[in-house]
Amino acid sequence: MVKLTIVGRVKDGLPLAQEARYMNNKTTTSHNLSSNYKQQAEFLLNEISKGALPLPSMTIRVDHHSFNYLVVNGICFITLCDSSYPRKLAFNYLQDLQKEFDKFDNGLIHKITKPYSFVKFDSIISSIRKQYIDTRTQANLSKLNANRHRELDIVTGNMSDIVERRRNSEILETPAANNTPQISSLLWGSPRLEAIALIWTPIAIITVIAWILLWVSLVFTDDYLLSTL
Image 1 (tube, rainbow, N blue to C red):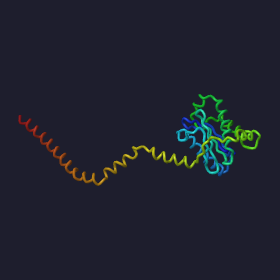
Image 2 (cartoon, rainbow, N blue to C red):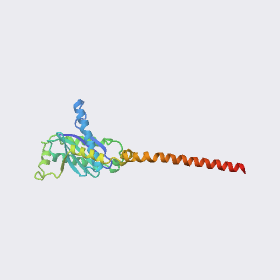
Image 3 (cartoon, rainbow, N blue to C red):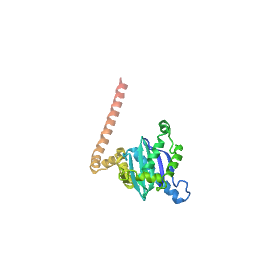
């Protein structure tokens, strides 16, 4: 069963429209489940936007489900299905969404600034999803039997691997400036520099005091000479 669908813009990772199977279910378990998977779908959209998932289509396994996504013309279509749901049908569903989305003006799509504000497409998602609920309908069986001897050329990955890569990437991307104070403190706290400071600090203080006394004496000498003229 198709449980969750999100359509988003790739260039900035903005989710435009959605349709969730359990969105109207008021039970706490179903609400938490829907919210959790929605966050994961948004995470995938963000990764696609950042170029971390460069493939135009992919299946990503998580728990007993699979996310399937399709990127066409800068728009990403993501759906969550049961792991037992035929992957060929899932991608047929995404392709149908893409065809309907292409009927809208690109200028309008690029003007959207608020997440999920393209509500006009929400009802279209719902309508198309209903066609894919029963995998045994004649239409869906025909889609499954079409080119059934040809495997889908789509890479499969795991959500845990994608999350781990993002975590490692963020560690590597930490600005070098954040490490500068630590490096500096380590240098100044080294025993060698402390020994140098102990030797040269008194000398520097004596030198500064000597210059001050010399300057004061010169000032007073000039004042005395001027007063005697």
